[in-house]
Length: 210
Image (cartoon, rainbow, N blue to C red):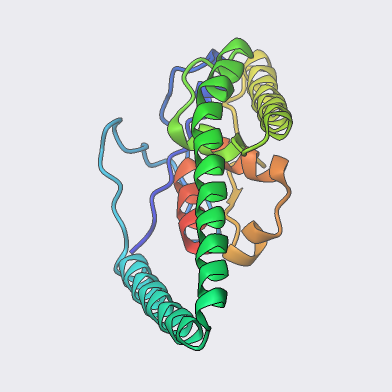
């Protein structure tokens, strides 16, 4: 079964209003096509291979989690009381640090969202915010600036095509869909550009990379 990947390039030309466009095919292939993009609000469908892979990975993650827990329990049982006390204290500190980092990321989301809006990206999605937010304010700000630069470059390319009387395209009508290995080796700016042009491909590769 063929993946359907909507290309809403008009979004970048008009600052937020999506339009139908081209589609691309399975990971690692180049395709052309004029089929209309799915209607807004349509549910994302997955191939059987994608479903099988998600189930396999979920089962593997759960099995690894159980294995790690057993190892920790065995290690803890070998400690004396004083060592167990220190171990518990270290774990408590680790949980506190993780909670602080999670809270920092949560609080940073509103700041990041406003940064994108102020920069002309009027309707940032949760996926957009996830892409740029970190625990550190300076890193989040830098990621937001990179995101806006990539979006503006795409918009300018679309505007140039429209002024020339051409239908906006990417590399003609061909769209290269990266493999998982190619995605892992992408720079931050390249990931932002992929997320902007092909959000479905980006989200799928993010899930597969965990």
